[in-house]
Length: 190
Image (cartoon, rainbow, N blue to C red):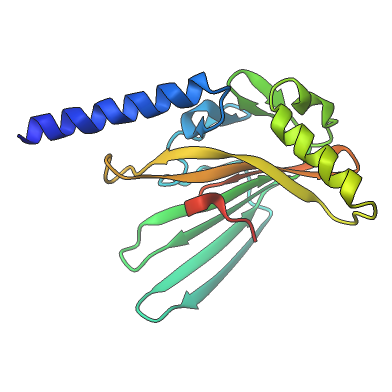
């Protein structure tokens, strides 16, 4: 019985992932993304190091029934926000690339900060199109506007549990200004 249940979960997972790939990469998998040469496959559960830390900020947030400790690491042009829970496990909230000296590789396609949004046109037309429509409706844009795609993330500690994060491009005046890999549930961006 237990073997059948595992087989059914595996079948559903494979079917889901294959259908995602068949639908013009509507949903990415975390293992399809690298920053420079660093794979993000288990980035939610394993802290990824991007060189020498230039600045570090730590704070604690108290909730009704639990506490979380947050740490933000700033490297050259990469920022990483992690949190640890009461058991001491560390989780990555998001990774933000803010400088052009890093490459984000997604399924063999390379994106960098300061690239024109035309680099998105062939691969992620929906993101490109959403930005164009947004700029036509909103003429005086003063800040980055974020557009992205969901990322399928499997829980490392419970393979039957998964959720969606997001890959977002912060765009201003037709130029990619930041690339965010948001690993929080539903990929919310503050």
